[in-house]
Length: 605
Ligand code: GCB
Image (tube, rainbow, N blue to C red; front, side):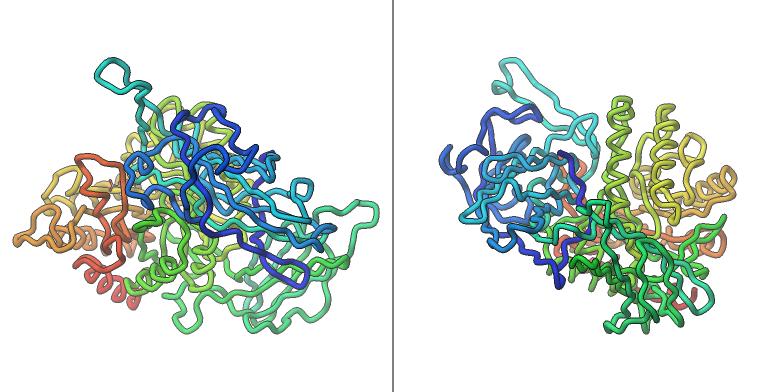
């Protein structure tokens, strides 16, 4: 069974959510470090019965918890196990197990019975587990997770096998086509929840604005109903204080509700006094289920030269981010989420890109509620080789877009989908491949613009023709003309003009520019890797941005918000150091520079 998780599990009058987070038993399987079939049936009995187990936190990446290089760089299956109880009065209801994310490939057993598997590391999946759970005693939950990246995974990767006497037996390494550490494990919450037998399965909300009023179009899908006598539903809209704002009961599964004198959803820089206003659509099924779906009333549109939110031009003062921190790796962490929003606002940023994979739902909730705009990126980073464009890859990519849109479609913060980062969009194969992925995404969600981040030049790209906004990643003065800040303006200016000449119907967004900088390293005059170089380098970009800001440039995103971990390599000094903040989220000089700029620009647009 492949099961995508749809609605976020929330408590209500009819639902109870319990978390299974905690310290679980764990073991890596060194005997079979590949994405093959299982070498052992470790699900069939308690994990501790088949060998030693180690304590492992959930949620977290497992890589940086122990002082064990083999585990940090492990490739293959790891096993997690915990125990849980199910209240006996849940017996006649629907009991669901949901994992927010397990990277990359996961198989889940309850009491030795397989209940689901999921392909892909950054999106939720869930399944009904009534027939597997025991209501009268303990239950054993086993999760096997495999982090191997291959030609058809997203992100793609490959394995190299090294034979001969010089290498240990069965030696191989994981090659990645992306510039961040392949953290793995159970990265987000594990929830067990209960709903009535007939339940709200999905809620889709789109909004439009009519003068001072908001129009809320909704579609409800019910699950578990027999069909002959479908239950009734009652829908109401509540404001942020819980007051009902719909004047009369609405009882159909799909329709439009008008909210008079609506408070629209605004990015915090466009309405500092009242950003991120969220309403709640309350769905009440006559047979008992109640679900509350939050939403915001806003519109988004890309024109030939602007990005409009609620018909007003939005200029993205942005950061590209990563889910990355000490110890926990990519594990969900509330203090980190809270701190990141503090620092996003400290920088004066109004926008981030979820480079290079979908971020946690808990993070996205904060973007909604704090009025921070999001470009929501799929995990398709580094589709670079011919073998990454095959039919299997394409079909998986479309499935991932379906799961991503399904998860985030009701979020007002999400104003654009990014279907990929830096694919070989100059290759012939890229054209039909991305045409299909983008068409598919547009069908799923006709309301939001679509983009992808390109590293290629206007002259050799074949994919930008299909998108609404051109997103470019640029490193003049870093990977090319290294150390020469004086050439940045000329190169960037030429670049922007050549894109405009080729596609004069699309605005342009800078999705990356940045320079590696070791915090505390200084040199005057500036020298690569010093704080002085990072600020000199960025200042040159800013001058060009200011010229095109008045024309068709709709935003700038620095690479990166914070330093982050990568694979070991001669170009990386314990990770990528292009953060304007350190990995601990403290500013470098560039952080102060960006803050001064963003606060100034926000006041002049
Ligand atoms: C890029 C990639 C990003 C890298 C960055 C860099 O173009 O999109 O993932 O980390 O460059 O620092 O090289």
